[in-house]
Length: 179
Picture 1 (cartoon, rainbow, N blue to C red):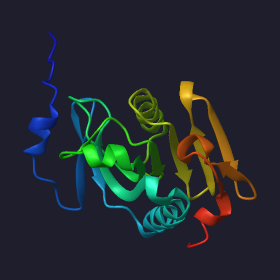
Picture 2 (picture 1 turned 180 degrees about the vertical axis):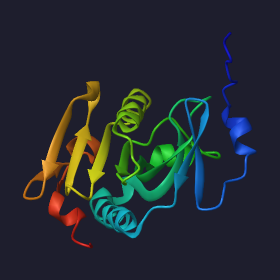
Picture 3 (picture 1 turned 180 degrees about the horizontal axis):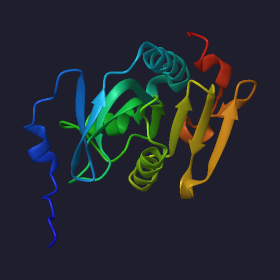
Picture 4 (picture 1 turned 90 degrees about the vertical axis):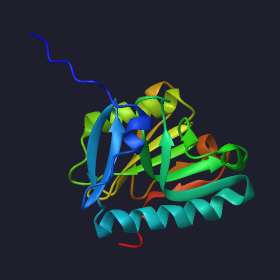
């Protein structure tokens, strides 16, 4: 006998209070507990926000812990760092519909690689130009682009910002300079 559970919608999810020690996200209609980030993760977020804001100029909004709905009904996440065009930013009513133009996730020990790849695929299918996975332990960044093609960058290399911001480069070592 099957015991199917009802998927939560974003509207139902919005009525659920967050638990102590973290927040809930909605992943494929199911609640997922996300603990508050550790200091290493927040340092990377802050550094990326600072660097990307400096490169982005007036046509982009860069922020941390940005709420968005990659798919309308059963997804509600917060990007560790998000870059959104000013045009899209001005149209936001409550949450960003679709994924930010650039989604950056800073991995933590509890991050599941398969979950991150699923998020990357959904984001790229719903508005993101790129999806980055930053690994502080390996001091590397994996950049996913159209078609889920990926490239891994390590210290000593630079990431082209042409796909995400229309130009410029970001040295991987600069992301970890604040640690």
